[in-house]
Amino acid sequence: MSTYARYGWLGVVAAVAVVAPLAFPERQEFVLMQILIGAVFATSFNILLGYTGLVSFAHAAFFGIGTYTVTLLWVHLGWSVLIGIVLAPVVAGAIAYVTGLLALRAVRLYFALLTLALGQILFLVTFQWRGFTRGDDGIHGVVLPGFIGPTTNRYYFLLGIAGVAISAMWILMRSPFGATLKAIRENRERAGFLGIRVKRYELAAFTLGGAFAGVAGAMFAIQDQGAFPNLLLWTKSAEPIFITLIGGQFVFLGPSLGALIFIPLEYWVTRTFAYWGAVLGVILLLIILFLPGGVGDALRRLFNRDGAPPEASDPGLEDVGGPEVTGEHP
Image 1: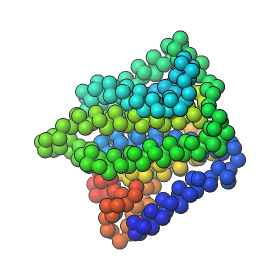
Image 2: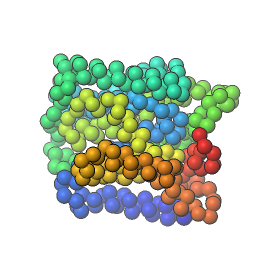
Image 3: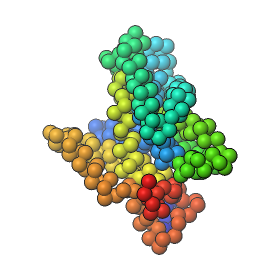
Image 4: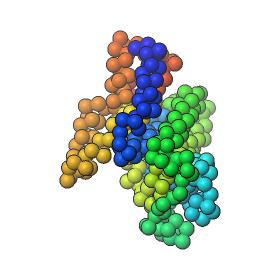
């Protein structure tokens, strides 16, 4: 499929996103907003997993920090949520930077375990500091500006934020910075021998991922008009992992596609089956087993059935260079 055809498909997707609220009742509009939030959240996580080869269990903590930045500024200072949205990635990115300084002292499994411990510390602080965060009661009833009060207006507002955030991540990952991250993922030692400051780039990726997770958290604060400690719990970090694996970690738009599949699927399963956790787990397992590269990689292969590599200008379905593409196994 030509580059123009791919841009055409992206245009169709954008058009569908714009008209979607007109085709669904208000209750489903909240599901649409959750898809947007999940797409930004999972794409920010894929900066670590798909591009840098890092698995972090603290990513939910940065998502929750973004949510609490918006809500706490409103509760304690009376600031508009619009200010909170601007500050959320700054605060989340700063905390991610400090967390990364500590976590990146370890590598591989030990790095993942260290992020798990640090994320749990952030969760416990939020859970127990009742005087500041209201503890397990959470924060509810955040007042939104009038122009995003109606549900449909709120959806379009979040659609705009998601578009800007995903576009920014796409530009970053298509830059020499993104190429360097992929080199580190493929072989950290070789990248170091080539003069790349591996730890510095990994810290930058960890910070950027945390900052954009903060954007997703701020979007949740707008959608839900509140915040609660479980947003920082380590189990929440499993959500972007599932979404990314379903959509494809080696395709930039894979996490967005995964969110489009996972969020409605979760919504339907939890309301249809009594033992929804087991049913959802089996469905996700089947997807991962039969589409090991994710749905995004399957579509990329379909678009390039002649075996030719994706074009350099391919908007989002380009090969991120993972093992699934080369036929090797990690």
